[in-house]
Amino acid sequence: MKKYLKYIAAGFAIAIAVSCDNYVDIQTEGRLVPEETINYRYLLNNTRMFDVTYDLPDAASDDVDFKNDTQITSLESSTFYSPFINTYKWSEVVYPEGEKDFQMEGLYDALYYTNVIITEVMNSKKGTEAEKLAVKGEAQVHRAFLYLMLVNTFGKAYDATTSATDLGVPIFTTPTVSQDIRRATVQEVYNLILADLNDAVNSGLKPVNSGLNLAFPSQSSAYALLARTYLLMRNYPLAKENAEKSLALQNKLINLADFEFETYPTKRFDSEIILSKSSFNSYQYAPMILGLSDELLNSFDPNDLRYVMFTKPASDFDFSYTEGRAYSKESLTGEGRNAGPTVPEMMLIKAECDARAGSGALAMQTINKLRESRFRTGEFVALTAADNNDALVKVLAERRRELMGRGCFRWFDLKRLNKEPQFAKTITRNYKGQTLTLAPNSDRYQMPFAPIYFQYAPNLEQNK
Image (cartoon, rainbow, N blue to C red; front, side):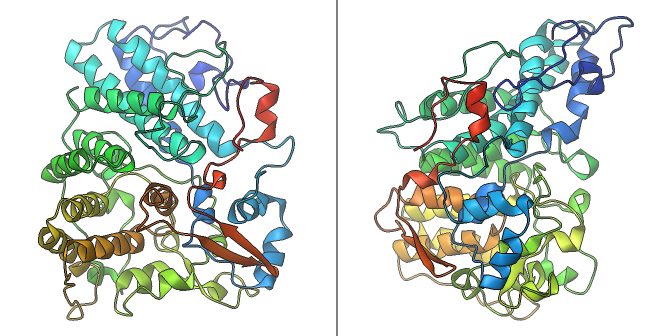
């Protein structure tokens, strides 16, 4: 970091008046340049900086449905909700002229500090090589997660035949705000993600983190993000391999039946979370904006506790919302929605990859193990599959139920699965009497950048 640094690369190099010592306890008196290894640990200890994600695309997926005009009118009356309304409508412009995308800026804020750590820590003083490598590895896991969210939000779904030319997002790998801002290709972004995670799994990270340390990357989380990355690349053998490595380290499920009438565990007591990556709390106090679609709700068994505990009638949140149900898990914990990897996600990845590889019976075994922990006592009935393809269909349906309402999981899955004719889907909505349609592989699957950033990055290409 440069002396008297007063800005960070947030939102494509927009100057922000934030000095370094807001985030790091400088140990060398009189200096702003942290030279000792411990100072990079202090940077990582600011977990609020790194425990972030991008959640706006949740409103665009087919899991969400605004049920009536009263609800829409209520949402339209607040400028706060305009990005959600525009995203729900798959509009070409999400943020009005002059308005910033604070979620994107939060991710680029965090990226700046990961780059500081990654580029500087190995030359720091008073730390062993093992300590430095572990600190660097944590920062690499954070950076990989941030770029994975960004490239799948603003770039096209990974396609081995086109990703070398498909536009991704700008890449920063050093702490700079002076470079020309241009979009790297999707392939270049994925190359960086894979390089970071493959370094991180061998960097000496703790095998597992839990409790108050859930926001710190572990070896399990590095494998888990590799599994997620390869899944999004549709490289199913490597996705399975890394999901299994993560599960070998961390595999404990929560039995929901234990908490139907008891206080649900917060993150620090949630054994399923591998790495905490919280939403910006956009939905925490307004879950009604994620009213769930009938298609999703009708896929649940009435004794499935994910339906019973994690959704509520929309009318519970606002008197004007008289129809449907909304995702509401945060009302149980008071915490933002986790987009980080979890044990159930790894089980779902393993099951999907097994089904695709022709091991449908093994896939169903994994899915039933997960489902057994989701039902009321005595109400679980194992699913069966007629063949491998039927197993794959059932796994994907289970994935949708388990990961609903958070983390962009459904939106990214739609992008990924649209590459396969069997699962390509046209989504249709009625919005105040107007029929809206989103075709498979539509350009609207790439979120548009807020117009304000083109003032600072004239060579940034907008999504169509």
